[in-house]
Amino acid sequence: MGTREIRYIENCTLLKIDSQLNKTKLRRRLLKTRQSMTVQEWREKSDRISDQLQNSPLFNQATTILAYFSFRQEPDLSPLFTDSQRRWGFPRCVGKSLSWHLWQPDDVLQVGEYGITEPHPEAPTIDPTEVDLIIVPSVACDRQGYRLGYGGGYYDRLLSSPAWSKIPTMGVIFDFAYFSQLPFDNWDKPLQAIVSETHLFTCN
Image 1: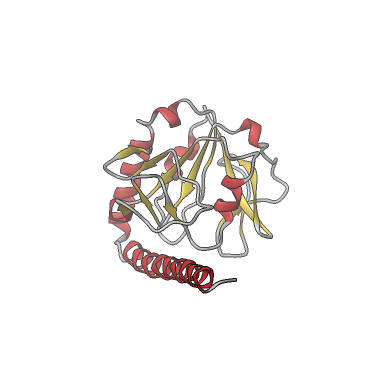
Image 2: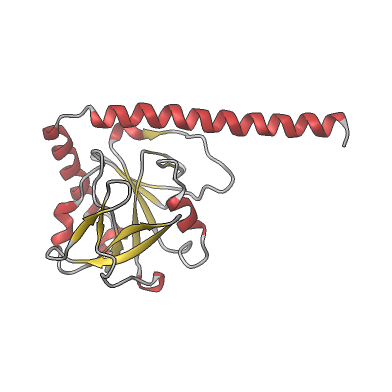
C-alpha cells in the first residue's frame, strides 16, 4: 500500500471520528435543552406536535402506526393513542433489535432495560407487512430527513433491514432540534417527513 492510500485511509478515519464527536456533542446539548423545558412548556409543545401530525397525509392515510412512549421529555404523543380508528404498535428492546407489539389503552405496560416504558412481552407482535407508518423518536432532524438518534443504532438497524426499509417514516422533534444539515454516515437512511410543533416538513 502506497503513502497516498495510507493518507487517504487516515483522513477517512479522522472524518468518521470527527463526525461521531460532533454527533455526541450535539446530542448532549440538545438533550440538555429538551430536559430544561418546564412541564407546561413540554406539554404545550407536545400537544401542538400531535395537532400537526393529524394534519399530515402520511398520518391520515395510515391505519397501523408504530410509535413510542415518551422518555426524557421526548415529544409526548399519548393523546393520539386513544384513537380507536388506528392500530398502535410500540417497541421492546430485545438484544440489539426492536420487537414491535400491538397496544391498546387498557393493556399492561412495563419498564424495560433502559427505563423506557414498553408493552408486555406477551402482547401480540406486529409484522412489517401490516405497518403503514413508523413515527421515529429523534434527538434532531435536518431538512434532508437525516436524523440524530440516541447512539444505540436501534432504528438505524430497523430501517436498513429489507423487511422494514420501504415503510414510510416520520421524525418527531421540537423546533429547536431542526437543522439545515446534520452530520451523517453512509448507512444513515433519511426519513420521509418531519413534524415539529410549528411545521410539517416533507423531505427530499
